Image (spheres, rainbow, N blue to C red):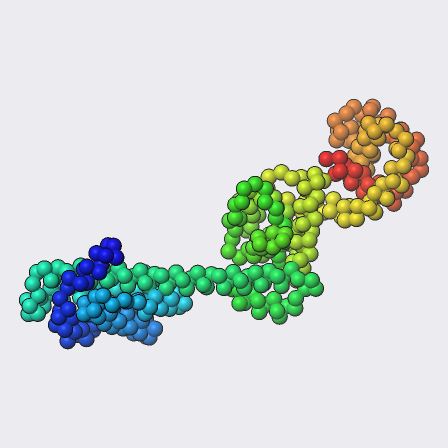
Length: 393
């Protein structure tokens, strides 16, 4: 119904009708409450004083305001009481449906009582019809007001929880780490259960913005300079699949699972992995990149200047060769270091003939001499050759 027709409806009702109805308002309120308590389980709780108080307030206020609107149809009306009821229901953690059901039931009780008393009150059929329409229009207005207050409170609560979760995320990622007491207090305020382990997830948007779809206990920091997540108990059931599904459209790297106070460290490792993936050093395909699968590469690239200096020393015997020769011998030497010293196994790894591998190994022995017998040299060679291979990707 439009605003104009609404005003016309109230104005069409004889103002004297309110005086006829008011003496019976008290008894009618009692009947409405009895009927509601019998038919709506949430209000059939004598021990729940809050429900009873809300019900009595709503019924009394509804009848009072209804009669006022009949008497003064042009006066402005602010249904703040019903918005407050809606906010109160939300604050108590209750759903609004029982209240709405109660109000509809109360309206039907009022209408039946009115039709029963119409002749005694001297109400003609037209007036009775207009009163019935007014009752249900008024019911819709009360329901809208309660819903408005309910949604307003829910939004405010959600906003406050979100603010507290951001504060908790800041504490978990602070340097130096926040005290366990401060973290515990912030977690309690945010309704977040303290997990045994967490993992940091570094994020970069891959294509058109799509908000991640994640479990409620994941702390989300998309508005940070470097977007990130903190995932509780990352090794728990379903967590890996949840991240894979929820982060489609994002480049993401997840750090190792660590105790809660080390959340910032896990995120730092994840950020380093994501940076290396962007350079092609680590795989940058679909799905979440997991630091745990690439720890050796992360260690090698922790100080690239140091690795470059070591490479200059350990790969010096190859420096005078053509680039293609360097590549073949470096590949063969790394396979020999990683997979064993038999020409057959190395050949299988490289998909070349064993005789080719033997030839290359003889070249390497001539170039390196006794150095290949030194365990420390072999270890350093594997480091620089892994780095070279990763950069070559």
